[in-house]
Each structure stands twice: as C-alpha cells, then as structure tokens.
Image 1 (cartoon, rainbow, N blue to C red):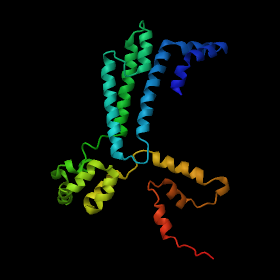
Image 2 (cartoon, rainbow, N blue to C red; image 1 turned 45 degrees about the vertical axis):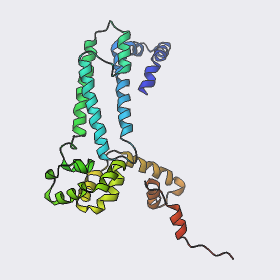
Image 3 (cartoon, rainbow, N blue to C red; image 1 turned 180 degrees about the vertical axis):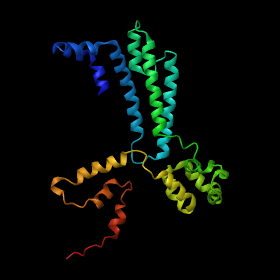
Image 4 (tube, helix red, strand yellow; image 1 turned 90 degrees about the vertical axis):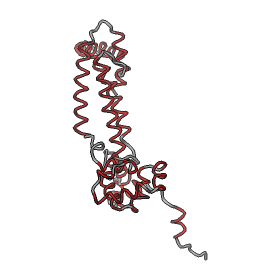
Length: 256
C-alpha cells in the first residue's frame, strides 16, 4: 500500500489540492514527510520479502533462523553504509535524495540510523541466535560436521555411528532435511529424539493461518454441524495420497 501511495504521490497532491485540504496538502508536500515516506516504502519492501521467506509448508525453524540471521546482517550493512552517506540500499530514498541535493542528509541519516538500531534490537530480542551456541542445533543442521565431544554423553556413541554411516552422509547431501530425518532418525533413536525437540516447534504462524483458512472453507453456515477433524487432516496434510494403494485395498463389487 505504501509503495502504491508513493507511486501516486503527485496524484495525491492534486487530489488534496482540489479537495481544498490545505493542511494535509502542505503536510504531504513537506520534504521531511516525502523522505520518511520513501524510506518506509523501502523498509516495508524488505520486511515483506523477509516475511515471504518465513512462509510455506516445508520450512523449519532452522532454515528460518538462517534467514533471520541473514536479515540482521543486512541491517548492520545498511547502518555502515548510511553512516557514510550511502543510501543505495534504499532505492526510493536514494532516488529522492539525488533529486533534492540541497537537502542536508544529516537529519535523514540520524533518523534512519535510529530506526535501524531499534530494528536490530527487536530482532535480537525476538529471534535470539541460539543455533550457533546450542549443540543440538548444530547436530540437526549437519550431524556429519558436529563435534561429538560437545554432546551429552548419552548421545556421543550414537552420534559417532551416524557420522560414520556413509549411506546416510550421501543421502544428507541430496535429501531435504525433513526427508533425511524421517528416514534415519528411527535408526538412531536417541539422536532422533533430541533432533525432533528442535525441529518440531512452529517457527511462524503459517500453519495456524493455513488451518484457519481451511476451516473457513470447510465449515460454512450450511455445514455448521460438520465434524471437521478428519477433513482438516486431509486438507492440511503434506503427504500425497497413494490412490493406487487405496483403490487396491477396496473390495470390488461383483456385477449382477
């Protein structure tokens, strides 16, 4: 919405002028407001891109943590660039500043840096970087590159067995993490139990939102007494139904 408002800012000015909204017209045309609007357009574009990376059925908390860490690193990069007057990371703001060379960039720099500092603090608070400190995260991310000495004694021998499993190592390089865990963790139950405690927690609200959306479709006013438990299982399942096996198990009715 902000990007659309920014694209139509000339039209908005004309509209406010024709509607004789003098205060809004003058406030909208102020240079400080125009610069702040341009920055917010760039900022929310970056946040929306981050949000898209945190959605989807086949994502997990480890992958999301990597995405969050990358975004926080970008924040630090933006701060370093803005400190020397380089706004190239914010395309709309940079373009507007180029058009308004007479504006001192100090005030803009101060505001942007203040916002980026607050943003970095919020990300550290809500997304603590535990994957680099917790041995369990390291074990799940790559069990073949784990320092066994850092693991609990109850896990060490089984972790060594897994590290020395050449077929598992080969599959790890080609399989998705979830597929690898499903295949091999039953063979290594102690490591598997610890790995599941890491990967199972929700890392975003996507699954909840998908469940609510499916419920709205299934349980309409005309079907308000429907028990939707089984239907939701089918709607939200990530497994493809084996239709051929289901058909094969059904008894054929003899023709009369």
